[in-house]
Length: 221
Image 1 (cartoon, rainbow, N blue to C red):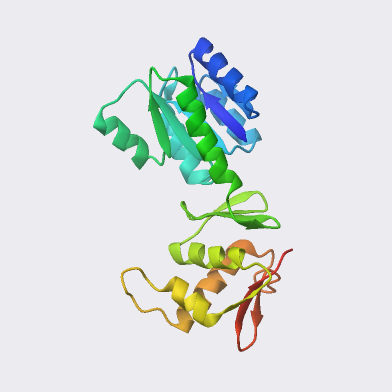
Image 2: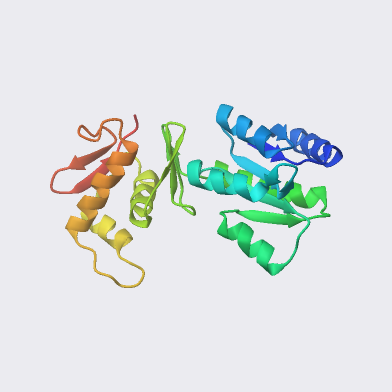
């Protein structure tokens, strides 16, 4: 897993980077917001480990930017603050997890490896994968935000790749958890919107094809 580590304490940065590298992760390090911004512009990451207190600002600003522009990246915050408000603020900014300093490196490794398993377990076919917990699709290396219904649809298609998925099956999976009614037109609208996000040419869909009179099928590229 490729990891961005943003920590301004050189000894802590080196220690964390060394341990993560020994676990087989590819780690890029920065000690400032400016350095992190440059790395994010040039490389793709699966996880960002962010210290909140940095010389040129707050790691929460990086977190906010990642969540806005690169929603597929997981974010783990490192903070010396442990009040409830600090924790809530971090989650509100889009963090996936946090650690309060001082912390055990073994605990950090446990959290990182747990996130790595989430990356590895994402259902995928060809150049498309899905992070259902965050409603994000990775399409040809780019993160695409999905609605709840689009995420449900893509999940069903990925789990049944190459097989016909009936309209009845899709209706059952789109049925709102609060009991809101979903009809065939709703399914068609959401499939059209999903195609606009995952197809190279939505006007000539090659991935999600119609099986006339039966349902739909997800094909590999």
